[in-house]
Image (cartoon, rainbow, N blue to C red; front, side, top):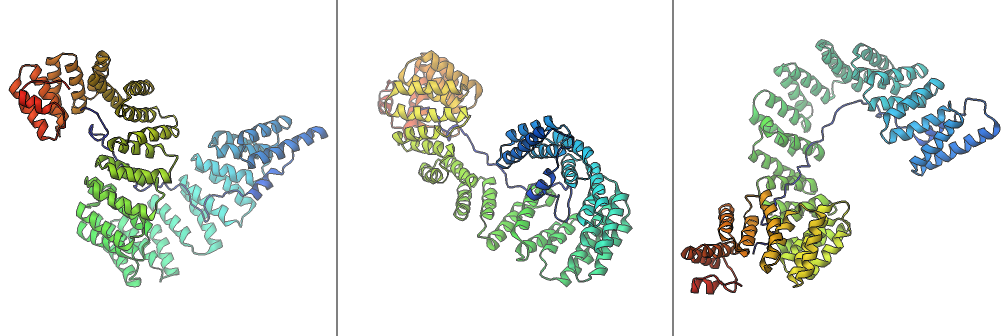
Length: 597
């Protein structure tokens, strides 16, 4: 029969290639990152008192509202805190402390415009409060106002000239704002306080490269080497700089020097791999890449990041499938206890449409990290695509146990139950799964479709048709439900005009789907429109990859009704050979005539 299920209408699942490298954009760095204000510091900022002379009663009211606002903020009641702080400002429009606290809440909600306006006013009222300036500087960074943020840190440096973090942030922001000369001066001022420092020298080197003063850039790296000649990574910086300037010979010499100084340095292999790739030697590049992957000195995160970069653009990295598999094999050998490595292997296998092998790798990942729902979801889809209903039933049972609030587990287990003819359990799962559906009419309709299937198979056709009607009402474009509902109506020979409208909509949307075409042809056949039915069935046969016994028998029936008796018998015999269990098929073949079931 023409019952459509996710597998026979080619509902292929496309796995999200969600394992790629995140694109990190460097905004700012500091010795400890952008300043995060502690609760103690917030408290310091909040003790400002109103600046106007208020009547004692108003003063008490202000203090009460302010303290209550801080409590509400601490308890996570942001809206209530905003209302209370706004009331504070009604009492004293110049209360910079209330402005600061309001700005903090707005910033937490990513309303940087309101936050910055409040802070700018607070600073104009109380220009000596550093906490106001620090928060505003953070907001300026978030909104890419790097020059303004740099100026705020310059003001802070004036107040605390020995605060190295302020000096560094001022320099970094000036560089980001492309105020290079000022940035260099700021870094040099900091260098006088700290002595030669890798972070400062590298920052200066990058600026010098940006403004075309390459000689100065080299001076910074050589200065680091002179200060600590036994630090191998400085030669890596030097090699990278030579490579960026097109001096391959000196670049290679310095990479080799790292290997001489530190034979166990695994990271240098990746630098050499990049060097050889940029110089057109893909074979040597891959050999160095493999050496880096085999190194125990390189952490798994670095290896995975590089793997993602290489496989994201194999044409650029000159990585072929065999080489990709070699890298995966190394990862499996060196890091077999990492679930992500097995997920990577699965991803590679699934790209080659090796579903069963990919599932084995995913199951291994689940053994290591059983609470990864996304991996479980992939396993579900593979079970469904392989039409291995016992496996789907087993795995979805585990998923429901681990993730009882995820409706997809119930949905796919219900699919398995329909296929395994566990109809009572299908009904139970559908009802339970719908309890977890939130604002997803498509999924709700699919649950109803499965419930309707089970109710129909249990013999309660009237109730099943009511359920199908509800599913279509919830999701009028649920073509799977429209198709199956139309087919069941045609089987029972009732409401055939309604069945034709539904199946016609489906065929209009999917004109090349053999299952849908078969349903529409059968509806027309039951209406006695044999010539039109043959037209659609011809198309179904043409578009069918695996001709089902039901489709073959239907075609034979239609051929008989259009006067092609011998051809009809030929297709009835094909249906028999395909394993049809039709009760009338043997009689059709023997008597060479159509017999209605």
